[in-house]
Amino acid sequence: MCFYYGYNEFLMDKLLELFPVSEAVEFFEANEVARPVTIRTNTLKTRRRDLAQALINRGVNLDPIGKWTKVGLTIFDSPVPIGATPEYMAGHYMIQAASSFLPVISLAPQENEKVLDMSAAPGGKTTYCAALMKNTGMVVANDANKERERALVANVHRLGISNTVVCNYDGREFPKVMGGFDRVLLDAPCSGTGVISKDASVKVNKSQDDIDMLTHLQKELILSAIDSVNADSPTGGYIVYSTCSVTVDEDEAVVNYALSKRPNIKLVDSGLEFGSPGFTSFRGRKFHASLALTRRFYPHAHNMDGFFVAKFKKLSNKIKVSEDSYVVPAGSGAKTKQKKKKRKTAD
Image (cartoon, rainbow, N blue to C red):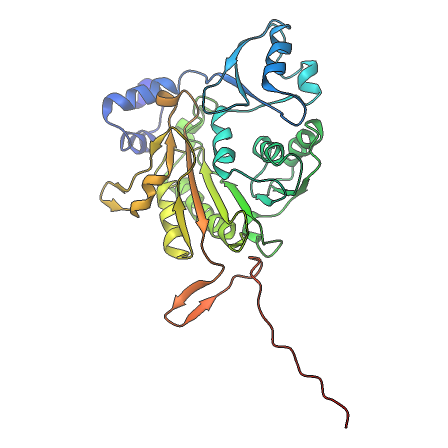
């Protein structure tokens, strides 16, 4: 199978652990076929019905993605480049994989909130958050890669986003840079085992060392994301962790680590109507029972890139470290009371 599909032995073994043989073959076959081109309507500028009609008038063959999204369209074929239409240039839509709608739908940002997108480039999820918030509140769009931020800034301008601040920090520097967010989205850097149809090099260029390095980074980032949220937010207090990987090491294992290191959080329903439940046990490893609330998406089952989504609710800004002692991470937005000094009155 390694020779037939072109995978190295390490990744083939990793993926065969996830599925029965018959389903694994379906997964490998799905990775040989490109996923459908999908676009997201920018509701700040137009409605999906009006956008669809405008593109149909240009000869584009399209359909709604599915019942789970009111803003997505699948493009079957187009006589004009879909990234060069007047509608695209005017910011009426974003070319965006259907799977990357999912973490934003799960995050469900509300108007007038303060939201952090920790790994934002090229801006599909950031601009979707801004559209759901109707350009109110504030979105902090951060990315550690300065080169990738060019596309992020361009998309923010093209789509008419006015509530977004773009910054260039290592995500692990939060919440020291800024904290007290109502919601945080962490679409973490990953191995890309869910997007092999887009990048076939993943088949041969990944090793256990790569996975170990990535999971170490993901664990650091998820703790930073949790500490950046204000549990006392009247509308939020939520964190969404997502990856475009299907490996348990980068998905359930990272979420389980976060639950063990931060007892002040819990997993909640993702708000996604479809997808496979996350693993609560895997090859002898036991995870927290609430991992059944996470969601997995596969190319062969859902006709979208492989993806993983987990949603947390932060219960307190304090982290219990022993029976009678707590730690409050700096920048979480927690209010600390200070004793006022009494003024000396003159005799």
